[in-house]
Figure 1 (cartoon, rainbow, N blue to C red):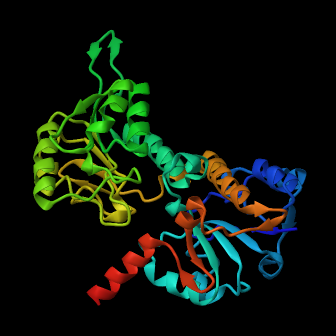
Figure 2 (tube, rainbow, N blue to C red; figure 1 turned 135 degrees about the horizontal axis):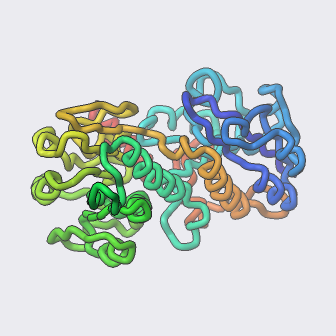
Length: 387
């Protein structure tokens, strides 16, 4: 019987939980034993009795969780207890740890994980193939972020979002520009439309125009090739000249825009700079920018990661964990993603690491003392070259 330990989140302001009671029941039926750290689901809105009713064992002793567990689940895996994971947490060799490791930001941690013979699966790395959709935690969290970005913008904007017919006359709808029509962008478009805004969307990939228009938004076109998208479904990094041209196209929209939801990111690299300080100056006083690329450097030159700032009368939100503010449903989604991955690995009540499986090989980060993920290996090489 495989024992899963669900660890309480310790990163600041992290309210999600890696496994919810619904998933506990599924895993127990599959032959797993599930230990849940006392209070692990409380801030996400899941009660201890719900876990017990689903068949989990509630454990308050952290050392027991580490000693008895074979598979460890956590949302934010960098900070597992009081500090960096490799310093304070005495995991047994060959332990399996699954969660968000953010390897592109915490690249120096990865080598120590390998040296300690930890088998780690970083949920950011789930390949974007059809068979892995139910495990794609990054897309699930992006969807949550896109929704919350619009709600945040609506609460910050000094206008109504919908058109209104009032005794004082007609109120025109807010104008929203969504930059990037990936998962987060499409959800932002849909949410802004539901709130009654007039929405335009911009993306470097012509292939997404149909999706944008199907949601009722106007697509702002740019002459590019489909090479702007990688084979894995991510936006591709383009030339500096291209980004300068992109800035010009975006700048033409900003003077008439009330809200910008910016989602443009390059997998594993700094986000492209698309909104300069001069462009911010052209926006109407009271306008709002929500920069979902803040953690990767931001699409807006004036974004401050983790903070909301006002520049030239424009409110710029640099939130880095909007999914965490929707802790109940984002925990449900993450839990289902992790459970699907575990189901992929279980064989006769044992965990089987099949490196021939494209999902396993794409998501695994370290195993048997080695770093296996190609994205992470390339990033380590780049880091070494710059030192």
